[in-house]
Image (tube, rainbow, N blue to C red):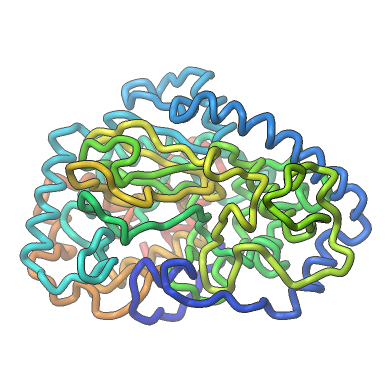
Length: 474
């Protein structure tokens, strides 16, 4: 993925979403009329037929989700990942989400939480969202975060998940077995919080998914726009390498290739207790929100009994610039009004109860949200830790991220400012010289030590490692 190089203005997680920032979504630039027309030119009938097939499939699968609820989300013990059951991998690839139980020992995860509380207490000027009672903290370089990203077991868990991806181009320079440490925020959400009510959304940009200079650079969603959504492969890593997912310098938009967004739990949290919701429709939902802008209802009254019927939806008679839920520089958002066939009230499911040390990850195209209200009695605490493969572009990202680490400012993909540059107890490079807690692979993942070319299992991996070392200056 192409990396944006400019520093971003100061902000918080609300800056990335229209619904949280209080901004009003304005009509999109007329250029999107031409973009939409070009995407499906000559394939209009195939797209129309595919949309109606999709609506029928969504109805079937939503009824299955309603019946199974949280049980539909696959989980596996960390001790099993070297010999994972086929049933786990099949469910994971169908639903785009997974839980790895005990990815980090419980005692270590609880110690990370204690360190985090101490770090925040020592630095009372730390910002977060909501501003007066933060649930999501603008922290990237706390001791616990660095320790977690460099944890050997977590790195192995990430490699395992990323191994579910393939490269349709055998010459692609990408290694899923050498994850990079991507610095993200952390969440400590107090009971009763309703401020961090982030609804259904997808990370990795919004308008860029339709733009030829965005995801179109890799033709990532080409099969969907050809009217063949059933043939779309969301696990083709090679197609994502040239993608530009941050064309508008959005606050919190990912320029690095994150195969998965994810977090490490530091608390015991159940459904409804300020935790995560995901949409297990996965790539069927992707096809829907990408095709939705080309269709309108004949009868626009949502109260009509036949509103969702396939026969009520027709191809746009005149192409508009509308991309429902997409706005330049912000994340892709979804709701019942704009995306009615997803039946989000039913198809969004809470993740099962998680405990300290559990790692949950969801594919970068997956719709996800957080509980509107934290109805539990204890804090819901996690460290956001996405899983990113090693590529030429992620190596270049590591250079920029390494610089922010040295300076103590926010990671490059996030809102800027002075960050933790004046924080007490913020670790620096000396941590890796003085501590036995951070493994060699963790240092490599942060761009602080050369990759071991001899660890490569294939000729392509060897090329990736050599190129990364060259980029990083080793």
